[in-house]
View 1 (cartoon, rainbow, N blue to C red):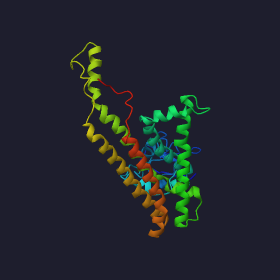
View 2 (cartoon, helix red, strand yellow):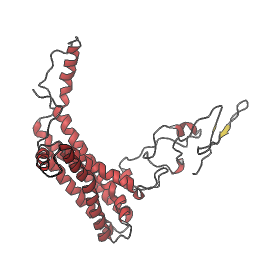
View 3 (cartoon, rainbow, N blue to C red):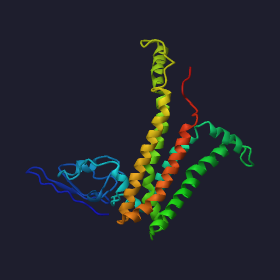
View 4 (cartoon, rainbow, N blue to C red):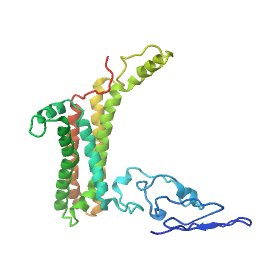
Length: 304
């Protein structure tokens, strides 16, 4: 662990004390101990906030204003790969890649579990041997959707990317390097799904508040208007969802090509490495459009 000493000169009558405890950053203060980084991060090589809890002890501990908040492009985290003080390089962390992939596929599985056709699939699977309970069927479906399918599709994309670009790196390195490509598509699906719930029932907050006040004996807002619900006309709902999903796809294409260009200086080679991941994102978006086009079970929504 590297250490940083932050010195401070003070006037007569006050003495600066240098504190150097085990596994802690040495700091110089007036009359008390100000803790440094609680995670023991080496600040000169700290990039971003993925390994930081924003406790800001480092800012208070340094009297020279060498530590502070700096404006950055948030999306740049997806296509840059610097060495980070706590987690190292993202391209070398297969665990972080697995988390990104699972969260991406989780957005699609979360929406898939709420559409009407899935109940037909569940009813059909419960007739199979050893799958007579809904719990067993759900474990099977989500196990396939969150573990087996992501592992299979990312492995195929990684193999194709290695073969087409003639990359000699191990498969796990290729997958870890390109896994952030899926993040914008996954975010687009999560956002499109929750936009559906908000846009179809956001105004139910008004009658709910009216009813609560009426039950408390303070009907200042009048009788509940239970007919309120949709925020926008229903005809605009699906186009908005698809637009959000397509924006996520666009972000994935940008991130994927940027990461390929980061890996290969030859643009043709970078393009060949990027294409399998672009195809995977297109498959996910196609599945997302189909899911969003299905009738959604409105659990927890108010109906007149």
